[in-house]
Structures are given as C-alpha cells and as structure tokens.
Image (cartoon, rainbow, N blue to C red; front, side, top):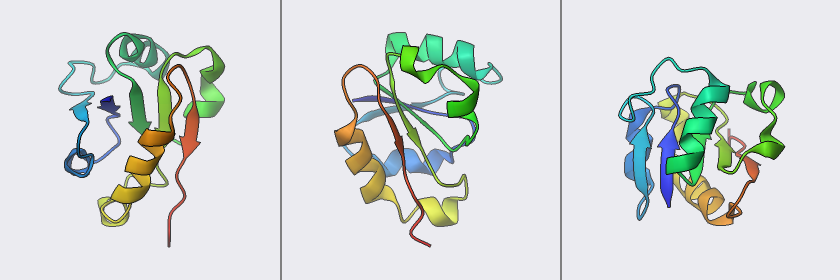
Length: 107
C-alpha cells in the first residue's frame, strides 16, 4: 500500500509500517499545502493518508475522497512508537476507495 504521512506525523513512524511504500508530505514536495489541496493531490498517488490532525474530518468533505485516512491520537512520538501494530491493522482495514479510521491511544 502507498502511504502518505502528514507533516504533523513524526517521520520515524514510517519504519513501523512494514511492507508499505511510505512517503512524507515533505518528501512529496507538498509541505505547507492546505488539507483540501493536499488530499486531492494525494488521491492520485497514494492509497492512505495518515495524520494526527483532529480537525481534518470536520474541515473536509471526506466522503468525496478516494483515499483512506487514518487519524492518530497524537503527534507525540513517545506515544506513537507503541502503536505500530494498531496503525498496521488500520491500514489492512482501509477500504479500496475511501474510509476513515481513528486510532485511540492506549494510555
């Protein structure tokens, strides 16, 4: 699966996503692009978008998107480094067209 990590997601998370092709917004050359435009661009190149932006689902019409979205509980690496299994399971659960999965913190 082709996965895009939002700017707010710590880059080391990519190493926990074994078997996936992972890129960051910065690596894609899209740093600073607003969410709507970012999602439009990502739909053409990625299957999943991972963010810790809690407002994304309220600011965007996600039902119109053709990319799966995973919302992390926090951008804090100390918490995220222990959620690799949950993130990988969420990636497996994403629908081919669109779905939104919110991962809860274990703390």
